[in-house]
Image (tube, rainbow, N blue to C red; front, side):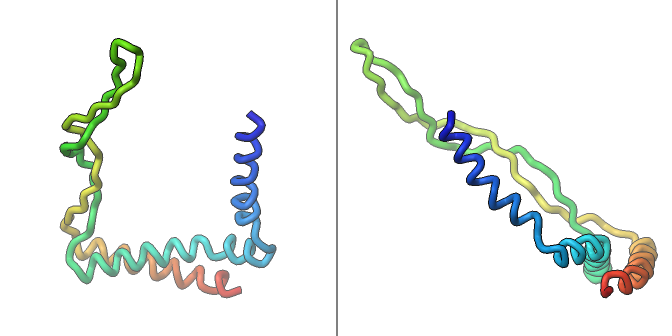
Length: 125
């Protein structure tokens, strides 16, 4: 039990220290987080307008043939492993195209550009 606790502390300590950052880094992160989010959304909307469609993702359950294992005991109590073919389900992410309304996307772009311009001064400071 003590070994698991020590291992958890050794793994959590660097992650906790990395999240702290210097006061300047925390200030920059706090004051530019919304600006970065708006910029990412704006890039996505401009990409949609350039392509003429947007991308969506959905989860699809697929089946594949794998090697499965079975452990059994013989009369003497010895454990043996046998392998056999079996079908297993797995979840896969699939991207597909979604048509967009160019007028609505252009309005969204204009709104994001206005919001980005308003946040620029605060982000630069």
